[in-house]
Image (tube, rainbow, N blue to C red; front, side):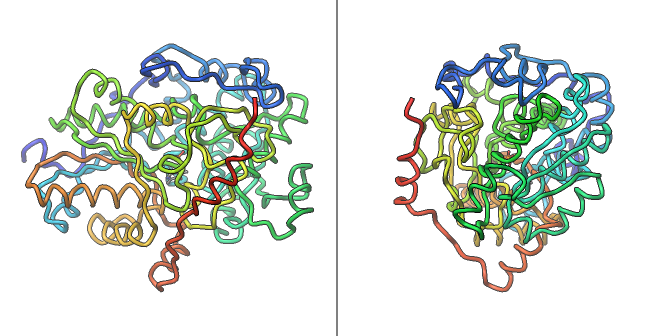
Length: 454
Ligand SMILES: *Cc1c(COP(=O)(O)O)cnc(C)c1O
């Protein structure tokens, strides 16, 4: 069998990368500095130290290109890493495309997504600095379950604020958190000041990631250093921990003897996409002809419709202000099913690279996205998470373009997670009840009136 005809390309545990990649020193221009939400001044390490351990703050602001992965973490990564790179030959045949399609399968982690790559790292650095308890928020429940898994491995306590509509739609993610020993609370809740303020105005509020972040941040900020906060996306240290995905993918493509023409990933806060694609950005900036595409839902069109502006990271204006594409911090999305793609903002590094036209962005309605997901399930066999399905739909579109032109492009995408706990969304799709909701321009304009005035 020719090298590039193999179904799965594996790395041995010895071949697993021993460093993460930090894109900050390689950005085409420096990031606009993040600001303190109270006074609008550039954020200092001390500002962040109420929420995060020092080592993660150092990584957040680091200008080192490569950062060593501690030995103990490499050991934990071996539970599910290195993950396979898979040739989607059955999907290619189904589409009748001359393109070659590969996917990096991050659904093989115990919680079923890429998120544990940073969850175990964050829990580890907190533990090293003597922290015994964490808080966080979760949308669809993927991040909450990933951090619960990490805290269980590292013997730490965890409270998760879960967006109300997902809490009601996804009981099984809640149970996973419970099995791994975490407490899960529906947000907005009566347990925090910010939650009570929201419920007073709107007792039936379906919640948002911004609101859940406010609650989790408040608990950590008021704990006097005892409890720290952990975020599953957006921040630089999170993107950096995820680069193990792209670094492995690079090695695997080399093993298969192929060079990628198009890289595709879905974006919520940007972490799986960045982790997968950032290690290839220096190649592109050095002149390699490679397209890098970020895919978002039209119900939450941050990169395609939001302005590139300073905005708060959360609804209650407690999280740092960052320059990013944003729909406004008071954006409340419709309860579309791709719960992980509903954040109002986007990682500043991803935002800057889109602004510099190094990364392309597309927005998709969810019915065609689910059609592509079902086609994938019936060819390659795995049922994708609704978030991942956004990437798959774009892969299908690009592969069909190749069919028209006869080009044998190599398309590689990040299979960010499986959809075993998202079957309610598949049910809605298969019974024709899924709405293609497009977020209205007027609502974006309205939210943007409240951008910070510093
Ligand atoms: C959370 C999640 C996403 C979106 O989050 P990012 O930080 O943008 O990666 C995408 N896919 C899956 C499976 C997820 O769980």
